[in-house]
Image (tube, rainbow, N blue to C red; front, side, top):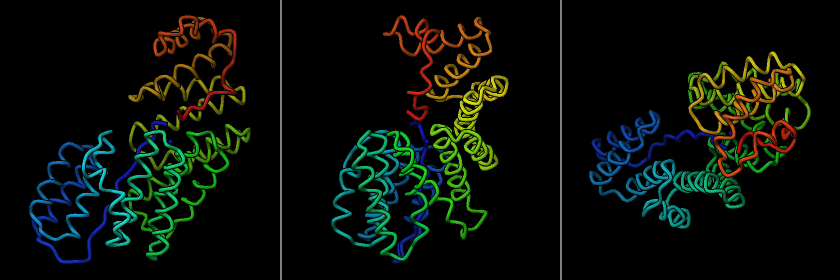
Amino acid sequence: MGGWTRRSTTVRTTEPMTRTAEQLREEGLAQVRAGELENALSLYDAARDASSEDEFRELITINKADAMIALGRTGPEVNELPVIIMRRRTLRHVYLAAYALQFKNHIGGSFERAVSYGQLALRTAEEAGEISWQRPVYLELGNTYVENSKFEEAARSYERVLEFVDESQSNQDRQWSHGGALEGIGYCKIIQGQVEEGLAFVHQSLPYFTRSFDLAESYIDLCYGYLQLGDTASAQQWGEKALSIAEDARHIRNGHYMLGEAAFHAADFETADYHFGELAKFYPEFRSLKNLLFAVDLRSIVNLKI
């Protein structure tokens, strides 16, 4: 979901390897899941140095590239990903490299490339007979489509995520994906005018989330949806909850905008002035933005995921 986050995919190689190297790799994956990406890079380097097996070292290259992409960096490992796809040493590595490049191009704003690599990852998962690999790819496709205002395609991708029900309920990544898909479908429906149905989907997503980022995302969608229904009291309730936990700039920006609109429609112009003023601080080059917001309702042209 612009500003949306991504989970790493844990894999194991089928060939034997030194235990020390695999332990280091597993520690690196754990650091990625904990958000400690810099620590993960060092562990991956140590894991690669501890093994002379080509297949394992290729896997480490993918793992490190994944972490570097999440950090917004490039480097030899990231540049190696297309080569890994062409080499086709294992289908698992082709899938992982394509998935990493899907994410890289998504956050880099290369929409067509992101979709292309996503489709490659889906085909590779099918070729390998590992259909469950497709779940995170569909979620990433949904996020890519929604940020490019292709809401029908986004909703279809999110709906595919919900089809993966055979995985263990204890699989936290599966649970998070399920919540993300529910939230994504809800937003798509709200923005397409199916507001009440969309709100129901977003409400369903809440129990799946524990991170403030994901909760703030859903709360802002609820604020937006209730505002669309004209329920300014509920909109203000959810918008304030979003701002109380928001750390991401997009969430703070959207929270102030939605709360400003809710206050304006409730004829609370002092509160509207405050929130529109806070929003205007994000756009110092537009000195008349606050006055514009009092004069024009921009909700019909705003995509909250960008």
